[in-house]
Length: 606
Image (cartoon, rainbow, N blue to C red):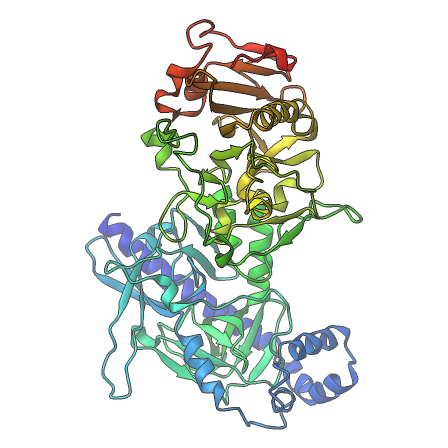
């Protein structure tokens, strides 16, 4: 960014701020004759519900009150100013996510300030006139813990860079900017240490006559709070007016009701229409209006941007794909302790002399592996493991050990599915992909494959994770592909064999885009490894397509069939490396160019 561009941004920000002030003044002036009448009828409206909208807002406001706060209702209707002492503690918690935004030019010089606050683990909310474009955000920093202690000494600040490349959503009329922020500072302080303020899309979080508080960085200085005697004077469809002390630099501050729920985004002072050197009120944009706009923009966002926006805890609604009356997916919850004993896939399962490691990925694919919250990259379940693709939110591959001598034929219980808490939700596809269509949640590790030994029940339950499924047309999942799995499993049981099975989708860059955010894999593969009677390893590979089941898909092989292919073919299609398994493939040298069509078990070569 040139110095001239930096100067232009400075002037643009000032112009935008001035424009917001003038617009606020116009709204204030237009309601002058109404304000006195509204004030006089306020109590009557609240008790008699003369207006349906007001009655609804009152009900919403009452629903937000802690039932143990017996004085809250009296505060809401203006009959008491008493507050529990915990109000101060709650205010300190609400202050942690609030930061000072420093806007820099390319030389690192500070030319503007604002306030912002975290609304999710990785998103910051402020004003459009503070960060009007991605260039301004890229050069800005967010300073947390910028405040003084009881001895009026400064605390240690923590600075984080903004990351508009991941998400930058702004609106000039509503004067807000939602921008991604890096999750660690230069000294490796975690952004999560500061928490976040939850946004509620409901209208009615504050009523006329109530009092609001605002946490801010006035003039770009240390954090400050204006508390009580800040009465809400007027309400508009998208704004509220309140009497609160603020200064330049306070733009982008959260406005709270006395339950410390964010009700508005502060953005402008309201100048006196008769004397622009004086201020008659302040104006904030209602959070319900901001959330409505974000909801409306969600279909236009990329997959990764949607995942970030969905971190907003309340009010962001995914499209309701299931029609009324359609069976919805049942989502269960498993605590992290559920996974503590899971050791995952065993590389020496076939014997000490038959080590079969997990496949490795090319350097390009390694960058796309989804990292777990603990920093690792392999999800370990009972008797199987999964490595996930970050951009596709599907497994690169699964790996399972099958013990035919200890297998148990467990009955299928309720069809409950789980998100894995060890992996961020944004890297897992859920109901938004699978509801109201003919796509099955196709188990990659089949339910009965790891169901052996003392942990059979837990292993079977673990297969019902969204990390272990992929979108498969119901005919593919329930018919031919299942027959192949049955053949492998039955033979493992018949001869008390131990078998390693690797499974996954072929992830092509040109896969069909579905519901604007998901890509449906065109093919699925499987590699089976076992020890033959003569002591040699056998590694066989299989490929199956969904052609003619899902429209507009192009495949490397023919229509809706299963093939036995060389292991090296799976490596070429997936970018995985199976090490020395290619040397144990019975068709590696015989039919390297084409696959064998599998019409029955007799067509399989082991």
